[in-house]
Image 1 (cartoon, protein in one colour):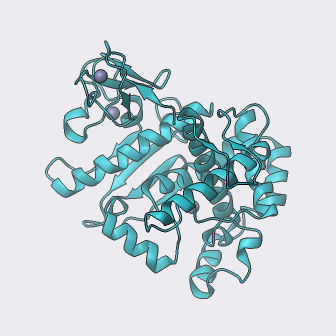
Image 2 (cartoon, rainbow, N blue to C red; image 1 turned 120 degrees about the horizontal axis):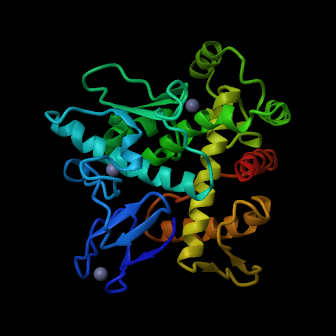
Length: 328
Ligand SMILES: [Zn+2]
Ligand SMILES: [Zn+2]
Ligand SMILES: [Zn+2]
């Protein structure tokens, strides 16, 4: 994420803000160039009052670009659902911002009625909901917006990391697989690294939940879930590239430098540039930054901020996905 400042008083402002916390000036996200604009001339998103969306729309009464991607959401009468939906859209705006920053195309259902991107944000309190992706449609169980529910599932699944934004980044990975592997060469290379995505999914799912991940899974996979099926390995890896790129962009935007511990070489987060250098060149910065952030978290009594270990084969996969994104 970039760092933004109020155009009136110079206060640092966050991407989620709809007004400056110091001087009260109105702010809004202009999706065409992903700027957090001070005193926008564009009208606010039609979801502003309902869920506090700070996006800007093309015309009064219309939704902003990010909100318009949602096809189904809770009804106005469902007070808890509305709160969950607001959280989900907050995470989705960050997702849409980063996709734009990375130069990834975002084909909508208006442009491609069959495979364009769209979201069903559904409450599992009233129906059975399975988070997943199919043909451009991302379905999210809004129970994942509730901290207690998500944490309960995280512990049950034995996962070190589970967030709404993480779900968004994982599911969008499935969405981009056919787009980024459209040419034969990319598809062949993807299958060599991740395995064949045409493998029987139900069989893999049953095996995963019966036996758990294979011993030593971290040697080749970024997460235990990634061992389940080649498609899940791809999506987990894709999500991880988005974690890494966004976090490094944020660190660079705030001028975060990691110079220690003493005796260690300088570790400095460079500005994000998907085109040049590639992911391997950023790994020194990444590892230095995450070591430091983990140490800071531990000082406050929290678990590691970044609970992952990147093995050689995992780095190969990350670099491959990152390269495909850069060339898109
Ligand atoms: Zn201000
Ligand atoms: Zn909106
Ligand atoms: Zn998945």
